[in-house]
Length: 429
Ligand code: CMC
Image 1 (spheres, rainbow, N blue to C red):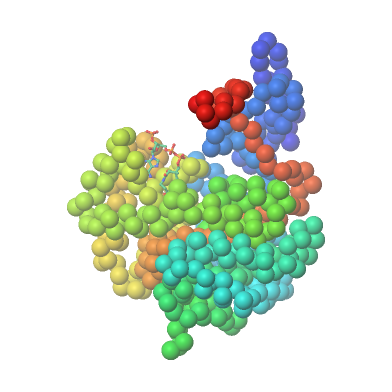
Image 2 (image 1 turned 90 degrees about the vertical axis):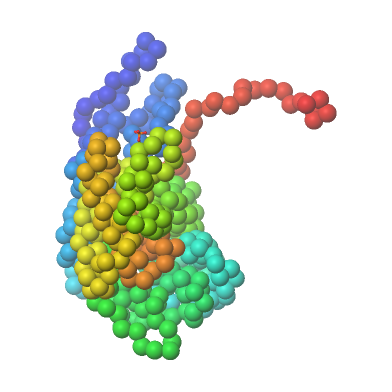
């Protein structure tokens, strides 16, 4: 907090608004009384200058390329921590002690199975359904299966719902995949780690043993860690907005899944790999670079650019290194998609258009390459993002519900439609 004020001159009157400071990052002008004092709203489509909430979970400095979860740099967490420990951190604010972690791990591990009736729910989908469509439906349907954790006024139920969502998302995502390839659902195994269990549920078949590669499990865990939270992005804001009306957590997370699906957000990793395949060979890259620069062509280089990072996305740096580890273990470094990706990265980083506009490869550029190499179809990429982001969504939802100042989200508008006019009967139109 500061005692500084911002002054607004409007129609010959002067108004004052407090300037608030967080622990780090730009100060904000508190305009909550603006409408009451002046009869004006602010206008900020896309919320490029609007802070929608106070939050102590994730901090991003887009200019510096910094990302902190509860104060800890993402690079340190990706190297030294694990997705489950990061989940505890995001949910509870502090890294767990050994005993706290053991208890948390046990709880998540023991909540991974889905209500058996949900199998029938999966079977109701067409085989060619997109996994995100299934996940959206299955997560929304959880509110119909887990009635004992939908009362948001009960803190215990809120915790159970959080654990259920984190634990069951891998099973839901893996089953969405299994269903699409016509293979039997593989049930979770409690003796495997979070990422290894997910890989097994995706790639094992009952006919033979499936051995999880530690490199793949580590890469998967890193992908989860790097995608776990990202401040007030579109899907997180969607979860908060849905939750602000006191909707149950399963319904709110389903809303987040829907928002994440779009190609400008979580769908970018899928769109990026499809684009790399469409480019097909290194010699076609200049043609696509020209299209990306052409104002009359809606084409954009998927996996490049970010609303907040105007410097290298710190998650992309970690992913770049993981991509090399995975590809060398799999021996697929000469794969043509990867060659296109590497060359595209090199050219875009040297091209004036991309330099001037600060368009760097983002996390989805590299995560798509890794997931492809592990064997996931592109349609699963966003599903994996949703699985990981569930912990961020639920942490942000929890923070919002715990906040006594929380109000229903209700933006206003600049109305540009018709002014009041009289109804004309259809016979006279
Ligand atoms: N390729 C070519 N030009 C681009 C690109 C791109 N990927 N991204 C932005 N630009 C240009 C854009 O045409 C505009 O040019 P001008 O100023 O001449 O009109 C300028 O850069 C600024 O673009 P913007 O759309 O105003 O920027 P934004 O902050 O609203 O958009 C973005 C951010 C991520 C939606 C955008 O960069 C984009 O569409 N990137 C491709 C999709 C993508 O990879 N998304 C994943 C983001 S990371 C994962 C996540 O957080 O969800």
